[in-house]
Amino acid sequence: MLRSPAFALIIVLVATACSVQAEPYIAFREGLKCSACHVNQTGGGMRTEYGFYFPQTDIQPLLGQLSESSADFSNQVGDNFFFGADFVAVEETTLASEARHAGQSYARDAQSTFDIVSGNFYIEARLAPEKLSLYFDETITPAGASSREAFLMLQGTPKSSYLKVGRMLLPYGIRLWDDAAFIRQVTGFNFDNQDMGVEIGYAPGRTSFSVAVSNGTQGGRDNNTGKQISSVGSVYMKYLIVGGSFAMNESRGIDRMLLGPFASLRLGPLTLTGEADWLSESGAKEQDQFIAYASANYWLRQSLNFRIAFDFLDPYDEIEEDERSRVVVGLEGFLTSNLTASAYYKHKKSVPQDPEGNADILSLSLHTFF
Image (cartoon, rainbow, N blue to C red; front, side, top):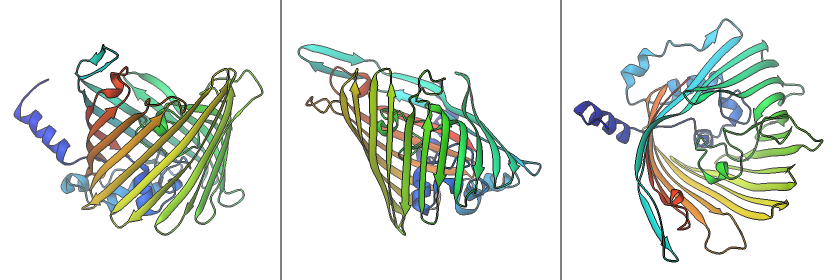
């Protein structure tokens, strides 16, 4: 690793002015539905006009002059074509870990690496504005190119409803940016897991409901008549959002059922969010798991956010002392209306036989988006 005054300055900037990465807590804090800021009605991916201009009108970036110079940038081509992107570069340091169990040592060495964890390009063609659109979400990184989402969406027939057909991220739970969170990683409903199918939604007034019927094969063709069902619903009150999710699938002789509530409470600049999930697998494999997530986000100066989050996983109900946990502490903030930076420390705890699960991580990242 190079050590120079310029490099040190970059580290100081990143560590003291850190980022918001289009996380759901922003929508929770503002009392907004996912569809207010994202073309995808259940969140993630390309931003709507409101989501595109929100950082320019409601955020006070730390580098105000640079932010003002980018105010004329537009993501619109002609009347009916829109594009967008997300790009996240990280430097991640994994600390050494060592634990002993039954006289045996389990250890791993420290390591540090640069990486690109997200590189997505979005295109939306509005074939009939506010009624019919074609949407593509393509992953383009050094690790390879792939299609994340590709669907046709029909809206407003009837009013406040939509229909999606194609390849899509499935509706379930809180769509955190952090796929390493147990509620994303263990449930399988994350940005690396898409499927072919149909999704319908209805969002009248202060409610929102979505259900998808898909192959249940993580994007591949199906070889049977069984289908996966996944759903999410929310009710929006003045300071409180409550919701729940349900999913079921049968694949390779395993019946999988998942359900869980979630909620978010706004107390001035403080936003509290939580989700709990129960995962049951039966048939060729028997396993019951409990997964939980809780976070507190404190918003400062219209540009900085302090976060502390807790993840919990009990992978086998019948086995004692096999729990995993993770505490994440970090500071986030907008450098400009299209550039954020973040610094997180992740303290992880697992069984002694899992050195990876006991290795703490320091993560620094830069995220540009539009």
